[in-house]
Picture 1 (cartoon, rainbow, N blue to C red):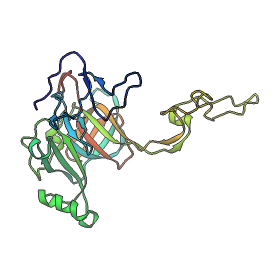
Picture 2 (picture 1 turned 45 degrees about the horizontal axis):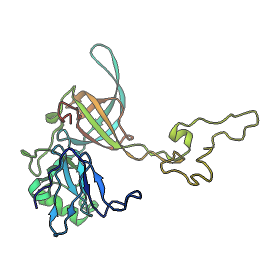
Picture 3 (picture 1 turned 60 degrees about the vertical axis):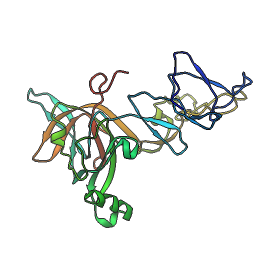
Picture 4 (picture 1 turned 135 degrees about the horizontal axis):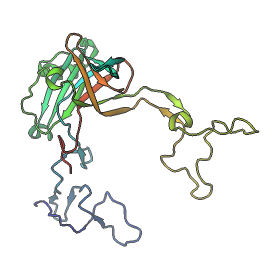
Length: 290
């Protein structure tokens, strides 16, 4: 059966993934066009496909529910954080910069297309390692592309993958130049198990006048009602060690001799951490406003 045409009015759709509404005798739910539609099956055992926005790609998970994946503004590279320093601009202004270096790698290992994989992306490998550091499936995947053994593999989801081929080397100077804005993502420094004051910037209690509550968390909810702790309550726990992206950082200098790049500001992680550098997403410039 063809795709269901949606109008501006809401449409009632039955689907077992939703729960029944307590105020209604039927299990039908009103699904508006602004939400993601789910694959349904009619009583005639024919699949009904619902249309998705063209700005995003859809990829099916194991249970068959489509998930929207955002695209990159362009191809990027992987790098290694070296540290921070002060950079003096020609007018004498001091700028704090992060020095980023490159190990052997940034080689295209696979080009994925809509016909073969259901979405368009370029897989890039980084940081050469010994053969014994990888498993046989990993080595076979890299040998198929004619690439060297590499530790890290990441994908850059693009609208168009024309011009990319396996074993193609990506050079930072050819992709970026001084003054460009980039998005840098990496793993933040792990802090371990921390209390509420350090983790969530809570205030401490009085330290004198007989107070016995200094850095304790305090009340975490009411008593009989609701009789539980709400999900997402800010409490002590593990801090750091998560993926974080810093957006719209400016490239201050590209040094070809030292093979390093200086990026204004701080980036996630400590020296030696893996970084992912991609063109900054700017609404109206390289990504649509809607």
